[in-house]
Length: 451
Image (tube, rainbow, N blue to C red; front, side, top):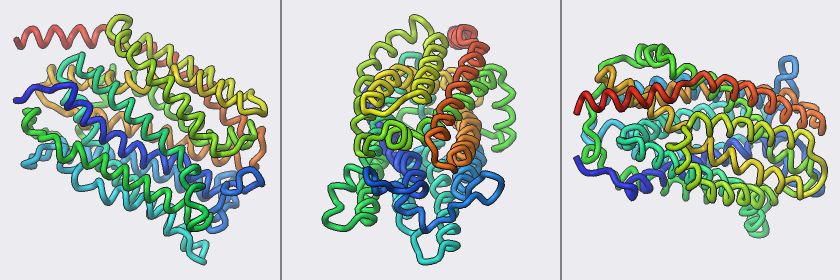
């Protein structure tokens, strides 16, 4: 086996930039462009809303909110299926890379379709197209991301490499998310040449092309069999999923993770609305604020990387939870003015650095301990089980956000940030049950016995 180097881990991390950019375009801008109403300052808000059913169809639940929620649930259900398939596969190119290489182009193409195809003259046809395309988008994202995430544990052959690869992919993840916030800026540059609606579609197409190239780079550069001596798992998908959730420490981690992603999804979905409706600033400032948050967060990465082995990932993650809770509270109470955006951006950079890096390393730790105890490598299923759980939290968040904000009032947007604050505090308390010290101690003990 060839030696795993930090250069290889950086090349691997480029793939995270690609799928993060596609995910960011959909999660950050679909609600913004498909719901709401334009105003003089932000004329693109809800630019595609007229083509989609907007009125609540069940109590306060909107069609768009239900479509997003069902998409996340569908995404969560397919995670263990793809993970089981990947864990049991024995392709010439490895258990993970062939999936990534095959799906990158279709994944990018369907992202473009989401902002292009559901715009016929029939609202009913548009509703159906949006639903189908969103299901396909989440399926393709799962086919790429589930094998990709499994490689985090497999390339993280040591504690140092697990923290390093988690740091690198966190950097490329927020880089992709940050660039996705440039969508209105890029569309604005193109608007004079192609028109208002077409400029948004063209901007999505340009970003999707960049993302596709980024996903293909590690898919063709990394020769999986040269670095990983993997054997196909014999456990079927849902049996493997159940076995994964029987792991007590993994369950403790997942309890807090679900709540964290529920809170974070509420915040991310509402970010453009908080800025345009509460702070009353133009949506083109979204990228500047996100870039500020990202820059400060990246500057903190070396500190998180160095502190994690010394203080422990658990202490830092709990700190990150409470820091994010403070950000959500500030958002719920914020007033008019650009300076509020910068206050939130600076404060959010701290938990972004911590929670962008360390949770993946925790999953990799649990997966490594399971491999040493059982002799069966089910890394794909551990990461899939995590995404299965947190996507359920995201699905609920989508329904809650679109239901709470159906009135489109400032109070309704403040309420979503308040809900995120309360749930994030609960998540922090639950993570205190996770026993990192025991996990790392057992890993070292079992490796010493094997040696």
